[in-house]
Length: 231
Image (tube, rainbow, N blue to C red):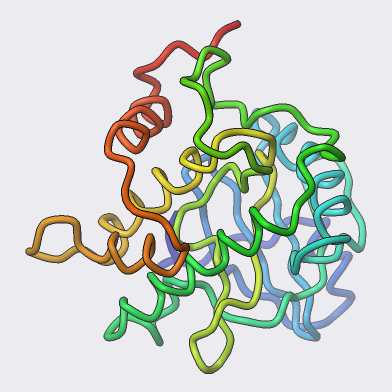
């Protein structure tokens, strides 16, 4: 996931939604999807046909999760696109945190703990995240996971405190370490340091848990496709 560095053509659906308002591409993911910001506090995500089903999966998850925790409001959706209202805050990888990755790490940990505490497992209508194997080890704590707990998907307010989550297309029930394993790994991608572990301890401390080395390793392998997901 990267910030676009070159001009990105504006799809027709974005032009229609913008209705003359200024538009800019603000995010591009590894699937070829692009998120556009529309002046006035709105965003439109557009995915290529091969990944359109991921946006379709995100719509009901956002609407359900929004009853319990701060996530974007769905304004409209269609094949390959999703229109949402802006959720106040800035991504944990926004340049304003570049010199204070400790703030971002703590906010990510705090945000995941709030998410896991807020979303009711018993009422969750969604299965496990798509990348989590059916034969995963017994859960340390079963929660409704974000499903893609990489750093960019946590938002911080002006003071650096957690303010919300985005990109919940793979939300589902799993061990909390499915999120924590990926969240801590993502810190190394976005905030590399020379020291071992980087800012992972800060994230886990903010979450309120000690590192579970075995579960972290397992879910990182699963994320990379090194554990069988069938079943």
